[in-house]
Structures are given as C-alpha cells and as structure tokens.
Image (cartoon, rainbow, N blue to C red; front, side, top):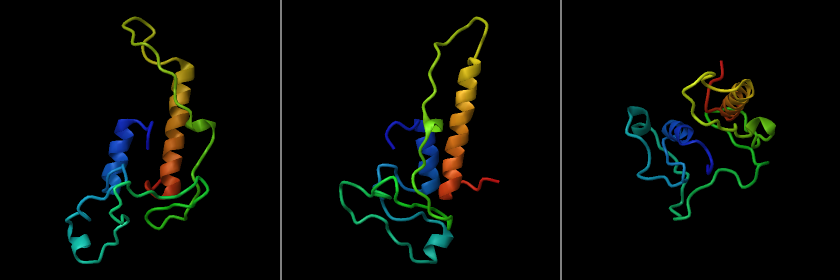
Length: 120
C-alpha cells in the first residue's frame, strides 16, 4: 500500500485486524466470536509477507461481497497541494476542492466494491 495516506492505512489496518505489510502477527483478535470458531490464517509464515491478488485483474472481496478486480482510472490521481496561507482566500482552490471530493468518492467506491465499507 505504498503511497497511501498514513491515516487511510491506519483505518484500513484497524478494520482488517492485520498489518498492511502483509504479516499476520499472533493470529486473530481475542473477541468471543473468534474464540468460538476456527480461524483460517492467510499467512504461511513467509518473512516476505502475504499478498491478496497477484495482478490487478485478480478478483478480491471481503465480508461476502462479490469479488472485483482492482479499480483503475483518473479518479485515483493525487490532489495537488497548496502552500499554507494566513491570508484570504483560505483553504483550497475550487479545482482542488473538486479533486479532493472526486478522490474521496473513488476511495469510498473502492472500499464499498471490495466489501470493506457498507456503502449505504
């Protein structure tokens, strides 16, 4: 997940309950549900980690969502940054604000598509 904003990485990592570097450490969480049923490890202990999907066309899903390939498109482009200012106008330009909303909607669509976000 190189290049992904650290805050987004933290959010995804907390939701997935395993590190984004692909290494599963110590098995599963300690809640009652995981104690009452067998949990399948995704890792084989390889020090190089664990990867979901070998190519962008591989289908991946979570929480019983239909598997989908990796999304692509211009909506995933990063948003240009502006130097901080303490004079008017504050905040973002119109183009930056629109690009931020486009990118946020694409992130949301991606999380919904793979089943990591409910979506409605």
